[in-house]
Length: 134
Image (cartoon, rainbow, N blue to C red; front, side):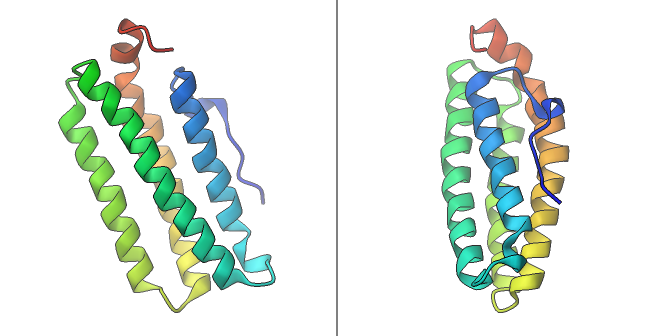
């Protein structure tokens, strides 16, 4: 089953929405890794993409937190750090089991999409809009 972008994930800030769409594309790729010819290599590539994505995306959000003096920045930055730590723990735990690694990563990313993007990220919308970022 394909994992696709849904407008309910939108934060109505184009640069952030475009990055979140990339996250959803990574989730979709990840969900299909078991059906590829070389799942271990494909999974490794996706994880590298996810790690690069996290750095790029978190830096984008955090730049605006500082620039706009977003009041929830401390808690939000801590959530970003927790994402990176959890990703590392999942990789270590299942480094030899492609199926379990794929499943746990998809679950982790789905939880992040629902609990972080749809909840925590939506808290900064007003601040970003007040500062002219749409």
